[in-house]
Image 1 (cartoon, helix red, strand yellow):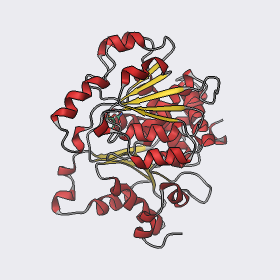
Image 2: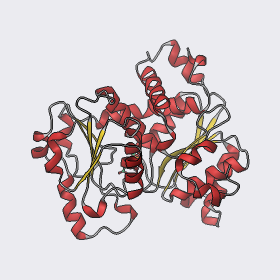
Image 3: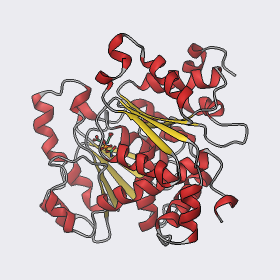
Image 4: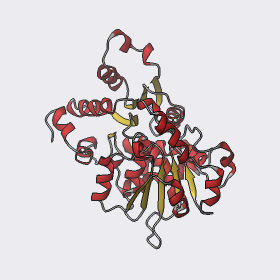
Length: 348
Ligand code: ASP
Ligand code: CP
């Protein structure tokens, strides 16, 4: 066990995952996609699907709506959000939790000089679960350490940690892929292209880690040189024996792809040169590129989109980004139920 935050920080995310679980082995704090194993991932996907397909007026939905009654979730979103905020809020309410939020830090006591950590500790005292989006990945790591070190019962979920991770977005993206393909197939292996600003797209990083749970999936990273995927992730995937291809040429690989995951330029994380901006136009799914994409392919985008996925393609049955948005509420319900130990017999 680490004895200080500094020691905790020196550990790899996989090593840290031990103290992010409760004594029952369940996730207590979800910070990184690497905390999932295949069994848990598939269990959550199955539960989310069961919730999604349940009769709105049926007994299962009624049991769900009471599952976490009496519990409270506090959502602290220091960065903008549409989907993640609304779907977490509706997910928590849909399983009986009450929710409260800080979405405008300028109206919180931070402006009086309170630290982010004290703000978060306040939410931990007042609620049972904190759902956090923050531009500094260290904010959630420090808070997770404090929860552990102080022995607090509060659950914690990462709803986006700077340019590092967004594990629940990756859950709904991989769930959409699982609904379309056998990810374990070997002949031929499934090929997933991840395209765009891979250096800074946290959703791409988290998805890549989840895909690595299926080592036969071939991952193809397609990005301009300045926005290539971080070496930390590439090394981790190589160590796990994942087949990985890196290219700058979308056109050279488009016909090989079974799935395409597009990302927007993450320009909130620093200057992006005019040269890179101009190059980024090569990483969009133009109608010419869509015409070359395989007939059975699946196209995803975490949204919000810019020009990388033109709205005209929404009518192309290969695009599944709206379906993924729809899945978000149910996967987040499944995750919260798991974290509070309510995902099994109580609901049957
Ligand atoms: N909404 C996703 C995120 O918060 C993707 C994006 O903003 O481009 O990471
Ligand atoms: N996909 C996603 O995280 O969307 P928001 O930023 O709107 O929450």
